[in-house]
Length: 275
Image (cartoon, rainbow, N blue to C red; front, top):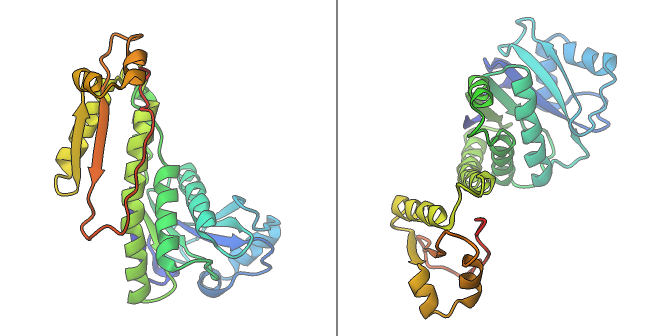
């Protein structure tokens, strides 16, 4: 799924599904959403009344555009209480991808509501993370489900900004960071979701090697094998490893930023392998 920034008028976007977040308690649509409703002849305003739509978080209702705008369908998605925070953006985007799959939409446009509770780049980053991670499923060992999920995949998810080129640039900045963070999270989730028989210490070390090889300018790697661990007197790791046929490894990855680091951050934790 591609995440893109869109600065066009929402009514002109030729997508399968246009998603309009609506705050809780809103009696009428405003801003760009009101312009879409006007183009549709007040159909969305009628929908709010007829479906008793209240804007509760995750609440949704949809209607076909009847060719009054470029989008095939329009969905009102409850955004909950104002303001539209980073946390709310991330959660709502995850709900949006699920709703879009339910409507069999291949192309989606997600309008940012009025009254953002954070800088646009931060909101776009959160929406990107929510959309990608909300769409994530671990189906590696479920062939039929994986095939169906791939067939129903969303091709593009557009974040619609209210402003011009400046807003699009800010959104694109957030999208880039959100994409990187999401892919890192998906990598970690994939490792965690592997069965213990597959994700052995040696396999985890191989993943670390692949990561370091893919980013040689930023990542350096040291892997301590059983011999090195004995020399380090790493008794705890060695004791646990005696209960397994798999040899132990201690993985040390170091990230070096492009610019001079302001401080050092060390993350230490037990690996996700069984033993």
